[in-house]
Image 1 (cartoon, one colour):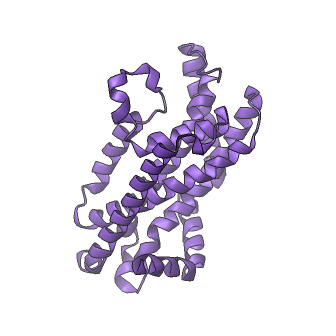
Image 2 (cartoon, helix red, strand yellow; image 1 turned 120 degrees about the vertical axis):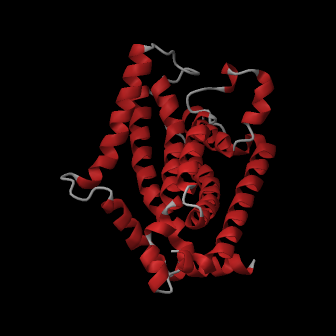
Length: 266
């Protein structure tokens, strides 16, 4: 418990630095852009329009469980987009901040938290767009909508654990970022964003449910579309909590083990 307590202390002590660096990370994406951060709104809106045009008008995909396909898809894509952005950014976090790590006593453990904050801002923007889509689709709001906080909280532990693990390994094996990119592509198609379990053979259901992101994206749909409580299946919930906490602890332990050699390698 002591390493975890020390981590909490570092986060609290460096909260201002985390906030400032997160905002700098967001602004750096739009350096030289006329409309700046508003691209964070334009990109998801254009994506929604494209998927609506292709699947609803082009392929004429029928509503899923009486929910328009584009809304059903986007509800799952919101958490996936946050997960993908955070892992992709954090994998290169140590390398991109090598000057800080080599020249100062910079607390490198906070790097995943910086990406967590910046991806969280994008997440909030996409949630606002989702709310607008729900209104236009006639799907009523409910107190169940607030359950997304619970699912995001679980995902946070997994994202931080993977962020520490991948960013630490990437210092020594520079191919890690490429491997992670491929892994995320495979992970995307292994997550029920475009498909449902009913579309696939029943013998595969057990293995597909082992994917931690299965619980997250289905949880977002349960919160915003179907208004089902998160305690509906406590056994499955406990399994995903255990998996995400294990990833968190393993990633943190690996990062602490590798950290003393960062400066020498960088």
